[in-house]
Amino acid sequence: MLWKNWSMANSAKIDQQELVLHGVAASPGIAIGEAYFLDRQRLSVVEHPIDDELVESELAAFADAVELARQQLRAVQAELEQQSRTEHFYIIDTQLLILQDDMLIGGTTALIRDLRINAAGALKRVLKNFRQTFDRIEDEYLRERGSDIELVGERILRNLAGHEPQALMDLDRRSVIIAHDLSPADTCQLDKRQVVAFVTDLGGRTSHTAILARSLDIPAVVGLENVTRRISAGAPVIVDGCSGEIVCWPSSKTLQAYLEKKRHYEFYQDELRNYCELPARTLDGQQVSVQANLEFPQEAEIARRNGALGVGLLRTEFMYMARSLPPTEEEQLDTYRQIIEEFNPYPVTIRTLDVGGDKFVPDLSLADEANPAMGMRSIRLSLWERKLFRIQLRAILRASAYGRVRLMFPMISGLSEVRACREMLTEVMAELRAQDMAFDENLEMGIMVETPSAVLLADVLAQEVDFFSIGTNDLIQYCLAVDRGNEHVAYLYEPFHPTILRALKTVADAARNAGISLCVCGEMAAEPMYSIVLMSLGYRELSMNSPGISRVKKLIRQWNTGKGEALVQTLLRQKTAADVLLSLHEAFAEFFPEADPGRDF
Ligand code: PEP
Ligand code: MG
Image 1 (cartoon, rainbow, N blue to C red):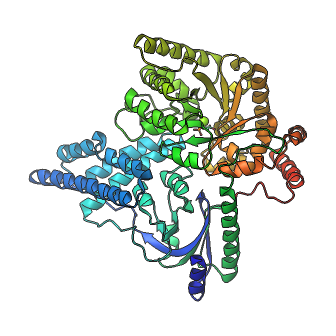
Image 2: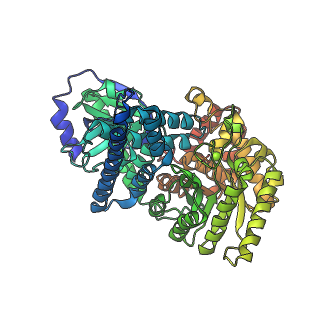
Image 3: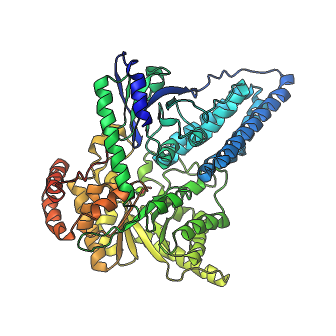
């Protein structure tokens, strides 16, 4: 194997002090390679005034730099096409769209002309404004989207400064890419034969880079803050994308330990692949519907390959990103239709817009909020911005003519919201009928249960909806009063907290009593041990990220539901998260003596 050759060839070099750094585990897997630096440090730009007669030439230089950026991105697309790697085209498309954005391009041009300043200085100002706007967005996922604009801006700045873009397609050795940040365009150009992993100073769990790394199956650790300053080019590096650890200049003992871990990991992954196509059925014949969470339409095919039987959560936020106008009804319809057709005859659950801030949807002009997690977000925003909501409802309804669609509303906190949504839906249905437009008259309408209020009111809400889907990411945040994106209180964000168990049971009981279907679509569903707990509580639909599917299926197939009742009773008796976890480990050691079901490497 190549990595074995690497370790032999490099063992002589291992004479430096071992350095261990910790970051965010962005994409699982263990890789060993040589540090290759990608120069993506921010350029230092100095703003300076220019003479009146230089304004036109500065404007022309800016236009040239933008055009060059366009050509560079098109060249990346052509290269990807040649390598038949078109699945990530949308990233380049997004960047090409940003290049047309009036706030970015028109805004910079206006500053050059009005303030009489250099193009780089003007662009830097515009980028700063964007950054401040995006930083205020509470939703981590959307906040990360601001980085797309920054990356396009950096590309233009480099062109203005005359820097050549660094080639990433023809590396001649197994490389760990080290960068301050990686643009999605960089990421999808990575030559998978030579790039074994990447690590970056910036980035979070839901940054584009992290999402792509997972879909490309390249181990990655992000958010290391200063890795670019701590290690040098050519250094041997181990990247553990499972734990978020990187080791530079490993001692031979460390290297041996990681080689062993890598061997186990690869063996486990090979084994998991066998489960993609198998049904998620317990030993006693209980079927669980394992579905996928999609953030982008391009993930649909990957999810299908991983064995997803439907989409339990289509996050529609991606359609509203990085554009100056919200998507039209026809655009939305097109996108939904593609996904529905990919999954036919399985259901696709489309969630209406769930944003935590306002600024990136240009039609909206809401005030900054002191406490946005509890402010004008999600369904509240849709019910406030009715025009936008109506367009989305029309598109979803029309898409339902092409397959099985379920409509889902996020962040419901009371019955009046459900009724307001139902009323809107009824109106839109009448409108479509009057226009002779086809849609599913029996379209299922459900809600996400992700606020404590919805949990406590679950019996009432269950009377007026067709399904519940539990958003555990937010449910944990709101029930435990712990900001899901705040690393300082991350130790309190406990999925196994007794409060969460009780909430899950309350909702499951309410759904069962009302005879409605029940799903979990938070990250918890992809955690194998929790998937068994959820099943034992009565959940029969689990929706998760694609890589989690085979892992969860494997465990379900070893489970016997007869053991579920006792397990739930034991867990519900526990008083702290630590006690719940301990009981779970004990129970699993007994149920699966040969396996290590909690293992995620
Ligand atoms: C959740 O809150 O659990 C969820 C699935 O939605 P999101 O992560 O998009 O808020
Ligand atoms: Mg949520």
